[in-house]
Amino acid sequence: MNAVKKMLLIFMFGYMLTVGTGCAPTLVAGSTPQIQAADNSYYNVQFEPLKDGYNFFAWFRLEVINKTRKDLEIDWNKTRYLYNGRDGGVFVFMGIRPEDIKNSTIPADIIPAGQSFSKRISPYRLLARAPLARNDKNAGEISSGPIPNGENGILLFVRQNGNTIQETLTVKITETAFQ
Image 1 (spheres, rainbow, N blue to C red):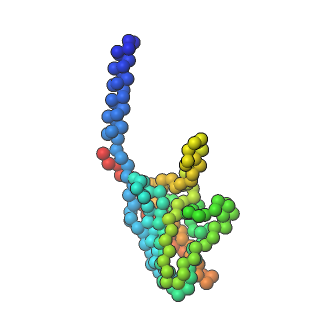
Image 2 (image 1 turned 120 degrees about the vertical axis):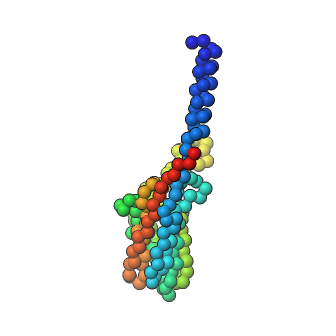
């Protein structure tokens, strides 16, 4: 094959690749409902998937408002990530120590009487680690991976004076293709 034919073939392949990827649909995640909420005599709670600028969900925001005159505590060792109705493990968040996850000794969060609490959480099983590459400032950094399509939720365990209150909140994550 002569040089002109090779160049023409390479150009055509490059053009087709450019056109093909330019027409590929963009996937954007959505949530139904956008925020799941529950209310009882102890607290108001909201569970919301977050994108933070991505086209996929990577975290959840958990917000709890203590409606009582006594402190509430969230038991992170019993609180579970639910995926399609199954136990998907614990949630993690900024400041958590790996040994606490391994030993099931994650400290509880205390919500004082009449106060609100908010935390960005991610399922432990969805954590992603940046590749360990030389000269990369993000090498080995841990971040939340995409939350998968399907029913995603939380089985929340809250305690007050020895009583345990459980709450299940779920949202359905779906991807929609846009041209």
